[in-house]
Length: 234
Image (tube, rainbow, N blue to C red; front, side):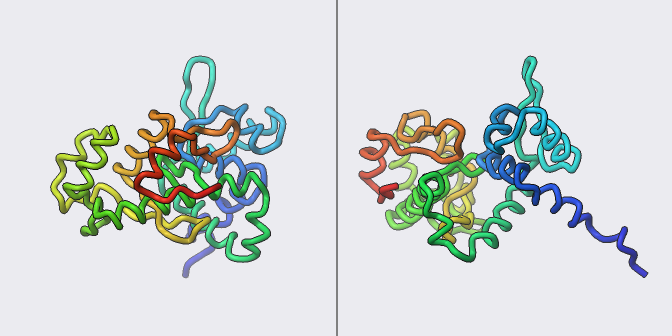
C-alpha cells in the first residue's frame, strides 16, 4: 500500500513557490541571468535579511543555486526544468482577467519584450519567430527548427555570432518552440535563440531595464529589426 511519504514532494516545493516574495524572486530569475541577494531583495520588496532567509529556503529545496564570486553570492534558477514549472504555473495563473492583469506599465513592458532563460520572449520574441518562419530562415525538423541557407546568410549579414551553428546540417534542430506565457503563442528557444538575444544586446538593439526582466527596444534596434520583422509598439 502506498503511503503519503512515497509520493512526490509536490506540496512542500509548491509552498516555497507560493510565498509572494519568493515567487517574485523566482520570476525575476526566469530571465536566466545571475542576480545578487540585494537585487532579489529589491525585486521582492523585502529587507536584505528577509531575502537571505527566503533564498536559503529556495536553495535548500533545489529551486535556485548560488555562485560565489569574490565576497558576494549570486543566484540563478537551478535548471531549465525549474523554469518550465514556473512557466506552466504562469500560463495557468494568467488565464483569467487578462485585460486587467496587463494594464500596468510594468506589466506592459514585460509583455512587450523580456529575457527568458537566455532567449527573447514576449511579443517581440513571438514576432521574431513568425518573421523567421515567414522568410524561410527556419524550417521544421524533428525536435524543433533547422537553419536554412537563406537564414544563415541573413543572420551572418546582420553580424550574429552563430558559434558553429551555421555548420550544423540543415536537418539539425538548433532551435525549438517555447510557449510564451503572456502571448500564449510560441517564441524561439534553444542555442540559436540564445545567440540572437546576445547579438541584440551586444549590438545595442535591446537594453536591459534596471531592476526588471523586461527589455527595451532602442532606436537603433527599432531600425535594424524593423527591416525584417514587426516590432511591437510597447
